[in-house]
Length: 143
Image (tube, rainbow, N blue to C red; front, side, top):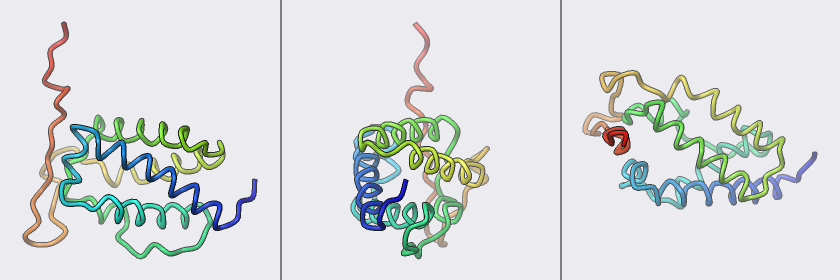
């Protein structure tokens, strides 16, 4: 299915607005974004994904690996993030081909973003602190 660059950008913007609303509202993952402007990250991610899906190449930020070295991201955090992305794609009525390609792009960067231990984290600049937000659900005991 062909979409104009404008239609693609509008759809990707809508998905990202829904997605980041979910992340910024999540009691756990929102802690990662304390010092992040939601409009800016939405715009950056839109430029990145539009380009990755074949639209105009406007993104000029860091690669996903270089954008996240200071965040201790584990599998459980990735799973929550991916669930929100799937929900956002559905809520925005994204065509199946876009959803499949977007999730494939996301998963291509997974190994570069996930960390096995906090020791794998490093600041993007000298004074940047490592973000380590433990999963609050991992401490709950099964009833």
